[in-house]
Structures are given as C-alpha cells and as structure tokens.
Length: 197
Image (cartoon, rainbow, N blue to C red; front, side):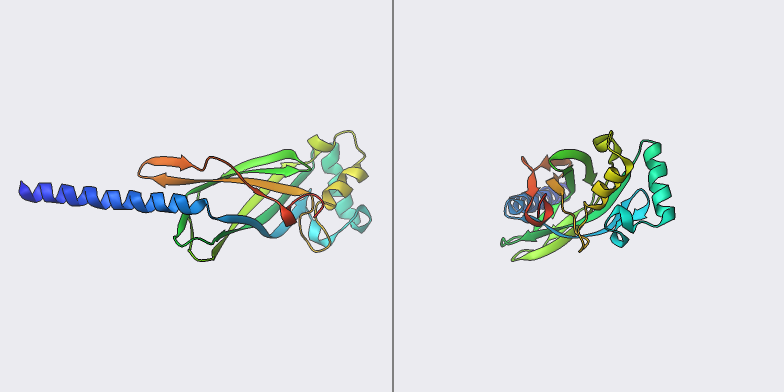
C-alpha cells in the first residue's frame, strides 16, 4: 500500500513539474517576436506568379486558363508565407497551435489553424513556421475586367517574389495537461509583410 501511495505522489509531482514547465513556456510567448521571413510558391489561377509580373507576361495558354477561371467566377490565389518566431527571453517557448487571419488591403481573405507543436529556444532562438494562404480573389474583384483582376493578383507579389499587399494576425495556444490555453490577443505581423512595403 505504501508503495502505491509513493508512486501516486511521485506521479503527481512529475505532473506538477510538467505543468509548471508549460506555464513558464506560456510566459515566454509574451516575449516572442513574430515577423515575416520569406514567401514561396505564389500561384494565381494555376499560374506560377514568380514567372510573370503583369498581364502582358502571360503565355497564351496561361492567359486562356486564367480567363477560363474568371468566366467560372473564380480566381484562386495561394502563397506560402514563412513566419519567423524569435525568442529573446531566457526560457524556452512552446506553441501547440497557431490560429491565423490573413488580409489583403485590410480586407480579411482567409483564416486557418496550424496544429503542430513548435518549440523556440531561448536567448535569441528562432523557428520558421510556414503558413499556406489560399483564397478566391474573384469575390473581392467582381465587376472588374479580367485583365484588371489578373493584374491585381499578379501585383500582390513584387519583382523579388515578396508579398506586397498582404498582412497576417497570429494567435498562439499552449496545451497544459488536457486544457488548451490561448494567448489573449493576436500578434500582428507588419513591416515588410504589409500593404505598401
């Protein structure tokens, strides 16, 4: 009996230590810095945006494909944004989930959740978190000509392959035991990852 009680107490102590570690990790999140690192795989209506900068750069086939999409009242756009999370604090940080909202010119276009544990080392450690944004631009541009629609989509990416009119809000969560604790507010990613920059 004494042995069983001893095992229970030890288990409780280990659980408490684990929870304490997670609480410390939550506190570390408040010191983390979220910023835009890079972008890749921008695609507009099945067209690799990295290869074209304006409507006139499209091949005949790509132009036909894009116009066909617009005639079907759709203009799918997707891009993977790599977000850098930096931890300048003295303790490691842990994220179990990341909820995000993306915008074009301050108009919400897409939301999502990353369900993957992310650990950020202390003392300036960084981790890259990829977020795939996908949306249909047609609903935001309905009424414009096909050429205007396509140029708008193509101009979302600059000559260096970087987003120019997109912004992101991210909200991390941490799991403590069986409870998910969400950070109370969103981290807003601006600077290089916003309209006009």
